[in-house]
Image (cartoon, rainbow, N blue to C red; front, side, top):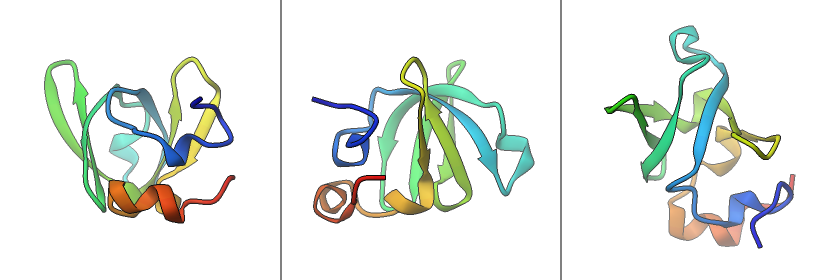
Length: 88
């Protein structure tokens, strides 16, 4: 079951997220659904427009769960992340 303590080991595509912190201040506050993921990038659908977000520069929250994820800690290929991510 996907929960706050093990979210890094699960599929992120389809989650509704909000950017809470970023080195790029223009990203803070963006809300949308993750539609794709690569090693270094999250692709978000924000009001019908796809935004490419670098994982290493953001912290984001999963809406409705209270979980905050540091993108730098999940900067792995999605298929490798399951093996490498530790609980936070």
